[in-house]
Length: 374
Ligand SMILES: Cc1cc2nc3c(=O)[nH]c(=O)nc-3n(C[C@H](O)[C@H](O)[C@H](O)COP(=O)(O)OP(=O)(O)OC[C@H]3O[C@@H](n4cnc5c(N)ncnc54)[C@H](O)[C@@H]3O)c2cc1C
Image (cartoon, rainbow, N blue to C red; front, side):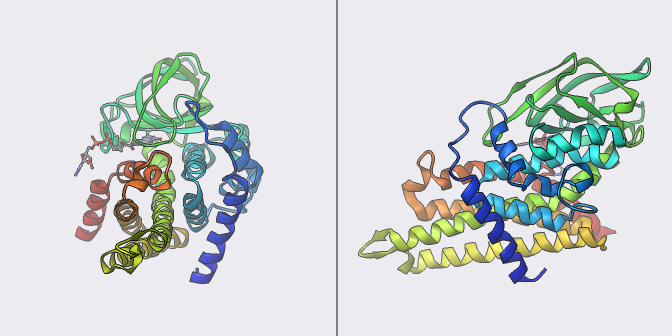
């Protein structure tokens, strides 16, 4: 993709977000912002990540580049909208890629329209980075399965209408004994509670107390749950970097504007070399992160060599860089940037979790090193 095509695509998404989403009053009720999701469906952004065969807008497979463009552009204007869109994809893609046609037809169109909320439930109180250690058990019961255990730090929980739940179906240890299931949010025995986190989107824990699902709820093969998880995460990993790049870009733009307006010692802040060099470093890191993100996304779309390592580098560098850029932008704003409700105060809270979820920075480094040693 040429820089001009990238700029044009981002500008279009930002313009749409500014005109349709910025005027919305803030969502100040607990839980998922369903109105925002419906608007994302109506203005055609959410359908762009789903295929036209299932109520979406694209033909063929979703391109990781398209996903990154949407996430970067939206994150520049509204992290709430960006996160809402991404979580619909994360929760629903296992169903789309590995579910029966009947399951995909039931769930994907309402998710693509923003009428049903999806969740991806892998992490447990005792298993985060080491996802192969999950303990939630699925036991055969009649022509279905009975699921018992807990999930924690699940985005969109406990409000989601449908979850992809990963459970242990076999006696095999580690990844081999894990299977993915579709679990509707209103299934008997499924409950949950909200968690207050330093991350502005809705998130919670789930309790599965003998939740029964039919055999048709299995996604992919028995014992193939990790493949299901990884195929979705491989598609989404570069786009977490794009989310971070969008936030860094927003912080950079705010810092440039503030440094031009705010005066100290009889001159605008931007005339101090200490400030201008900081801005230059912020711009350089943001652009370097962007290049890594789109390199990884293009490698994914082309089925190229080294995509695992390139995606890990992109996620690692973009999220770490965004944290630095947002922090530097806060510094340039001084006290104003820390006022509750200021863009920088919001980004400072929002950016932190990206270094932890969908594989922490340390896990990304492990992946890069493992690929180096091959
Ligand atoms: C805002 C937010 C949203 C989330 N949404 C979801 C969701 O929708 N679905 C879902 O399933 N999960 C979700 N998670 C959970 C997330 O995936 C986990 O937090 C993540 O996998 C890390 O697990 P952990 O928090 O248990 O940390 P731990 O695994 O306990 O790790 C703690 C620390 O140890 C480090 N560490 C662990 N292993 C190694 C190692 N081998 N080498 C070096 N360092 C290591 C980690 O990098 C980290 O710094 C979310 C988390 C957050 C914060």
